[in-house]
Structures are given as structure tokens and as C-alpha cells.
Image (cartoon, rainbow, N blue to C red):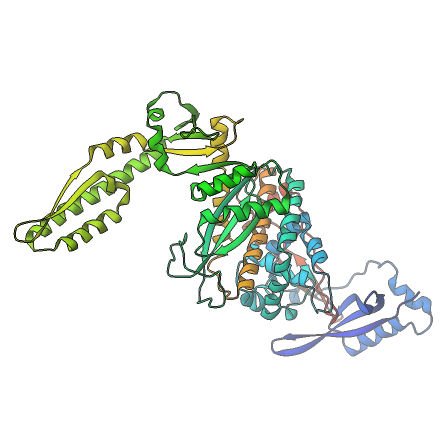
Length: 584
């Protein structure tokens, strides 16, 4: 069956004026009804040119003449005025293009299409979600800046097929609302897909908590409260983010908690959530000492879950004999470990660790704080002798001094007395036992676990993988600019964190590809190098007066070409301009 073709003007605003560019379109029938498909962009045609094309399209003599328009094109040659060649419309291409390659490997676009099928909206919400994720990876910014600057200055209109005039901040905010309900499904899809791509084993789950702060009052968000700030912004409200990653830092899932929620109270909810989502396979949970409590240990044991956890340093006192014993196992230079029995006779195993580098650090800290306290106490003694002070006032000064230098506060014994005239005096002395214990325990720390079939070095190495969770937080906060949060509504805040999480998935995917290609483990350098590639429009004026416009992708430098080759990626030679039809 033959489908008719027509000429249609496509209007664009340039330099404050409205210009018409012509396109040859064909009517086609789709599931949503008749639509116009662009056959060719003809550029700026004069009246004679339009009439000739229209006659050829309508096929005045016969249908065969019209059908001939769709025969394989023959090579044509025109004379170009080289003095009038112009390059314009430079756009950032490499970053968004690389992000789309990663999205394709993860099947993220298809999953978003499945979760958010296209409806009556002008632009599908799955495409708008991709805009947010790509911008979060390439150039983290607000939705307003994306709509007003970033999108139109990049090649995303051509790559995604959505014109810049269709992107506005209201549509981006609504995309956040549409994306949030699909968080569990996206986490599960990405966890499975990452496991397939990189042959990941989720036998070790690393769990840690961080916080990020708000700019603004957030009066309508009950999760926004003041609490212990990891960003040293106790003056701002915050939320806590609990993240679970694999042994190589690949994200498994996350949850948001109120800003004043203690780390130790999040363990049961996170473990239960992950098990409901991914099952109760034989996994080992790794957590730092901030998660340790008797209730949490009992909860993990009840479910027959295995764990490796940090332990408060106060328990070291119960292993004083083991600290002086010679039976240490060397894991690496400057690091020794040994297995110890549960001091309470339980089934747990305790791992005693001793680090030479940590010993030097703690020794230096103790000496520094000890010196500060000694100088401060000496000054207070002289001050009390010079002028009369009450015992309460002097005690407050001593307490403040010790509170500011708590690491060495136990090294001093202080006493505030009152003389016959009622003036307060300060007496102090050093505690030799504290210095003896400090010298013995410096650089030592304790782990606990119910994993009985691993050696001490294996348990220690597994615990050290927690640095992957800490690195994930640094990437979220610095490279992906998760902080500060400017959104005020609870749902928008949660959607903002979800977009950051998806951006981190792309980051780690690129990291794994770089590692497999022998390019190290720093994807930021690769992203910056490939992100420097741009697209340009080359305008070629012909002898007939018409202009040929070709949207070209810049050729990579030698270094960029090496990166692309090692990653197994190939740049396109050119791009088709975005479809300017009204129907998406």
C-alpha cells in the first residue's frame, strides 16, 4: 500500500526571529493512529524549490514517478563555495553519549519503559527520567539549570529525540514524582543486571550510614531533622542514608531515615528489607562498630545470619594478656591479627588487630592532647592563684578543657579545693597507669564475628571492604553532588536521592568497564576525556544557492581514541537532527 508524502514547515526561533525549515514527511499508520514520519530534512527552500519537491512528491504523471523517490539514492555531486563554509551549533556530545552506552548495557531504558509505559503525555516519563540520570552523571545540577542551560547545550536533544523546547523544570519535577514509586523494582533489576554483566557475587554485603544536609527549613518533611552531621553542618536539618553495597562497591539498595535516627537503630529494618527483596541466601553482613548493640547481635543470631562487625575499644581491656602475647599472624607489612575466644564464653569469635600506622597516628594524637591538657591545667593553676574564683567556676573550666581533649583526659587526675579564705585552688597529677595502657593499646582494635570457618586474615580483609561503602558515599556527595539538598518535599527529596543512586550505578558500571579494560579504577578521568567530544553543524553553501547542513561528531584525539578502543566503543560519524514533529 502506498502512503502519501507531504511538505511541512518546521519553525525554529533564531536571533529573535522565526525561521521556517522544510521537511518531507510521510503519513504512516501506528497503534496510536496516523502519524507523520520525517523522510528527509530539506532545509531552507525557496518557493521554486518547494514547488519542485511538491510536484515530485505528488507524482503528477504517474504513480511510478512518485515511487521513484524512494529508490536507493544515487551519488550526487555539487559545487561548494569553500569560502563560505561555516561551523556552528557546537554541543557537548561525549558525556551524554557515554552515559547512554552505559544505560544500554544495563537495560535501564527498557526497564523504565516497562515500568512507565508511554501514555498521553507529550514526552514519555521514561525519557524524562533518563534526562535526570544523564545530567546527574555528566554535570550534576538543579532541574532548573538542566531545563534552561544544560539540556540545550548538549547533544541530548539529538540522542534522545526530544527537542529542547519540550524540556522545562516543571516536567523534570513531575518526572521525579513518576520515578520514585519504582525504586524497589529498579534496585532489583540493576542488582541482577550488574551481577550478570560482571559476574558479581553478593555473598558479602557491606552496610554503612551517612547523612546529607538541607538548605532551607523543610517544614513539611518529617524526615528532615537535626542530628549528628557527617558533613559538620549541625546547623542544618538533614536526612540519613543507609546504603548496602557488594564487596566491590556495587550498589544493592538503600533506604532513607530521619536525620536524628541513630545508626544502631537502622540495622533490623535494613536487613529485613534486603532479605524481603532478594531472599535470605547465605550472606555475610559487614558493619562498623556504630551498628553494634546487644539487641542487634541477638537479632542477627536469631535469623542464623552471619556477620562481621567492629567493636567498641573498651573491650580491649579484657584482652590485655593477648596484646602482650607473641602469637600474632602477619597479614601484610605493619598489620597483625589474631583470633581470640569470646570473653563471655559465647560462640562468637573476636579478631584482635594491630596496625603500625594506626599506632603512630594514635600515639601522636595522645601526645598532642596530653600536651594541651597539661598546658591548660598549668594556666588554670596560675589563674586561680592570681584572682579569686569559686570552686564551681574553676570546675567548669577544668571540665571544658578535658572535654575538648577527651582522648587524653584519662591521663590526668584533677581536684578542686577551697582554701581558708574561700578561694578555689586546682591540684592535678598524671596517672601512670593510663600512659602504660595507652602505649600497649595504641594501634589496636577489635572485631567480632560468628563466621567460624574463616581465618583471622580473611575476616580482617572482609571487614576492610567497608571502605567501598565509604567510597560510595564520597562519590555521591562530591562527584554526583548529592549535597546539599534543595528540595523541601519529602517525596522530592527521596526522588533526588534515587536519581543520585542511579547515577552512582552508571559510575560503578563505567568503573568496572575501565578495570576490565586495564584503565584503572578512576572513571572520572575517562568521563572527562570522552566528555570533551562535541558535535557541530557544518554548513556548505553550494553554487545553486542552497546550503547543505551536516551534523557531525568531532573526531577523537589520539588519547580519546585509545580509551574508546579499550572500552570497545565506537563513535558515530554523524547525527540525525531531532524530529521536529509535534507528535513524539
